[in-house]
Length: 230
Image 1 (cartoon, rainbow, N blue to C red):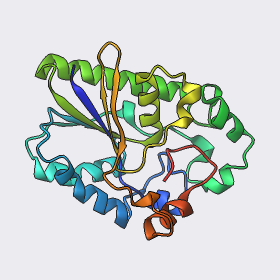
Image 2 (cartoon, rainbow, N blue to C red):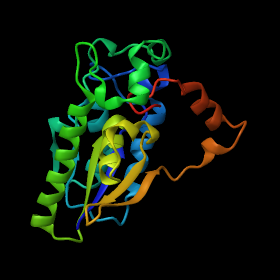
Image 3 (tube, helix red, strand yellow):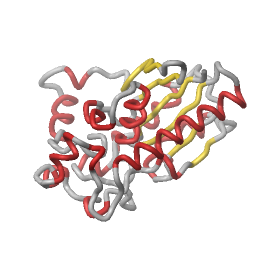
Image 4 (tube, rainbow, N blue to C red):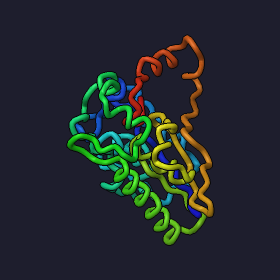
């Protein structure tokens, strides 16, 4: 079976500001996110890609832009099914503020029961993104063969849902999964599906105490497990 490389978009202005971006307009990569995007062609150097699929939101298109410039022959497809969750009234609100919303307890413990006010149910997000990942994988297998590799650039909660599905985890357990911005996760849909790699950024600096990187990541952490974290 083909290999799916799941790429979370680079860090955004909303990530660094501690906001739940959702589908709010004008959310772009911050300086660090632009550096992450610029590094993508080298990170994938030597890896043949059959095609790339991405969320239509600007931050995902922007993350892929350097790769597309380096590989102008790469077929690239925007797919609405892998867009960000519609967080409704929670969109663009501070994560630290949302951590105190009564609904957040359900977000943490029973995501399958969550419907965001004026927005989308997490179970519907799970259904559409998993269908997209498995559908594109079948297309790649039919068109490019079982050894093909393809890329999907999407959002944190979407990656959590796809990984949970591949591991056979109930949606209520997907909050245990935390993909970083610009991280790569590899899945192969065999029998059973295999999680080959998770959340690879090639950078372990965040785990070294008292460094700029660990301080940056700690400052962005919140108790609100929505949007994939920053």
